[in-house]
Image (cartoon, rainbow, N blue to C red; front, side):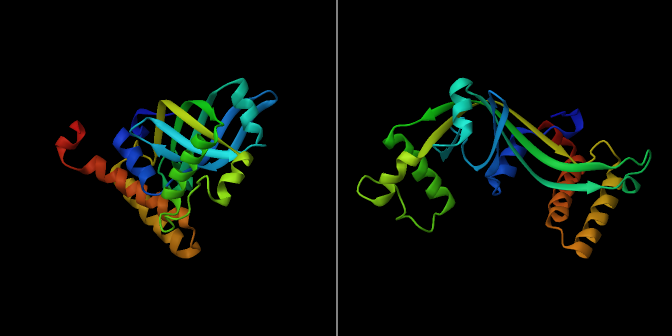
Length: 215
C-alpha cells in the first residue's frame, strides 16, 4: 500500500477508526501455491499488541501459517469513487478509502483451554448481550473445539492510510463532500456517506487550531 505524507494515518486516528466498530478484515498468508486470503472477524488487543481470531480447522490458511507465520491483516472501509470532474485539474478520477494493515507473526493455538479463551473473548466482544454463551468444559460448545483453531497474531508494524484528497485545497475537499452528499441522497449508497464523514474529519484536522499539528 502506497502511503503519501498527506494521507498517512496517525496512531490515535486509526485506533479510533477501528474502535468505531471495524472488526472485520482480510487475513493474508503465504501459501505454497500463492497467497491465501481469508475474510474474518478479529479482536484487537491493543494493550498486548495482539490480534485474536479463530478459523475452521480445515481452513487452508492454517497450513500456510505452519509453513510461514508471517501474515498481514487488512481492514478497509469508507471507500468511494471520486470522478475526475469533482477534483479540479488535472481532472483525474481517484478512489477515496481508509485502510489499516497489520504486519504480524501468527501463532497457531491448538490447546482446548487456549482456544476457549480466545473464543470467549470474541463472544464477549461480538455478543455482549449474551453473557451466558461461553465455551466451558461442561457445555456443548466444548465438544466443538476440535473443529476450530485459534490464531494469536503479534503485531510488528501498523500502516494506516486515509486517502481523502488532503493534497488538494481545503475548499475543494468541501465541494467534494457536498457532491458525495448529493450522490448519497440520489443512490442511497452507504459508502458515500462514510467517505464523506472521513473527508470532513480530515478537513477539520487541516483547518483546526494551529497547535493541533503538535498533537
